[in-house]
Length: 305
Image 1 (cartoon, rainbow, N blue to C red):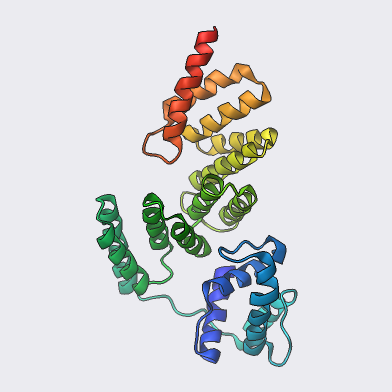
Image 2 (image 1 turned 135 degrees about the vertical axis):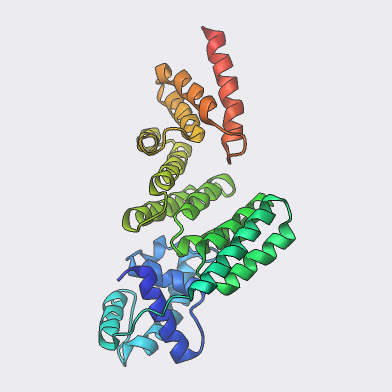
């Protein structure tokens, strides 16, 4: 059973037993535990790993024990086996999908919100995004579009929360945004690498729309994180993989040019900067910066020849 399907089943059982749904942090702990992620490696926005293990997890496993344990204590280590056994015993189907009419209404509201965002009408855009989520709380694209709006407005913390929601619902591109923000805004390279790793795992294990482009983006931001840590060989390897999937991303060539410079591979530097200028777009995040840098570096290189 896939992790998102399992979560829907467990959430339905908790609602039936306790009269409430699992909150976002509880779902993230459950999801990561199902994937066998250690507490020390759990990065849940707003919570330290030690707090997750000592406070949040204790109450959560007590709740899960009550809902599915049937008198047996459920722990992180034995959760997956216990959950699979409970599903098999109860033969509880996944909650039925939302009616198609509701899905259509949610999609329409999301599309209206996106158009309003693009037009700069942010207050109205937010209303339509919130309506879309109210109709269909599992609409990952709406969380993602909302996050874009908040990021563009400079409200980074809220953007990250919404990207987390989109990522949690299987929207792999949200992991690109999370990886980028942890590099750009917080200089937290460890978290960036972890989020990108989760995105790559999602692309590999799930059917993701435009998976090649998403994977290329994830590999490019992973290379950026490695570059910032001085791991140039690792960065170069990821960039080369990204280019096999998408060969017209200006950012990839810009990062590659910097990597070549640090590796002392001067024969490839100018070519990479030229490719950066050829493909970079001013309206793409981070590429505007690399356009200016490419022009400056090519001027310096040509001046030395």
